[in-house]
Image 1 (tube, one colour):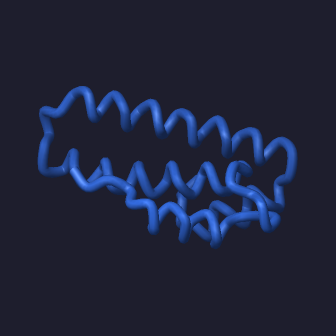
Image 2 (image 1 turned 120 degrees about the vertical axis):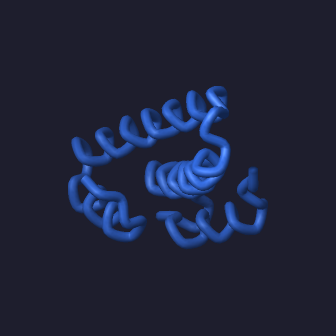
Length: 90
């Protein structure tokens, strides 16, 4: 299974940050979770019986869903922007 490298994570933070010192806004967290979900999905296509990774995937998807719901309630325009930028279907 391929992990998210430090450089990839920094690139995501740079792309989705809201201010210069931002590393934990909803957009950044959603982008990082989306990247991890995509990597884990590829791993599970090959390793269909990896139940612990499947559970981890479900937990990540749930966390991302909660963050997206929060963003949709608070600032709908930012929600639409992040959905389009990441190509998440909703």
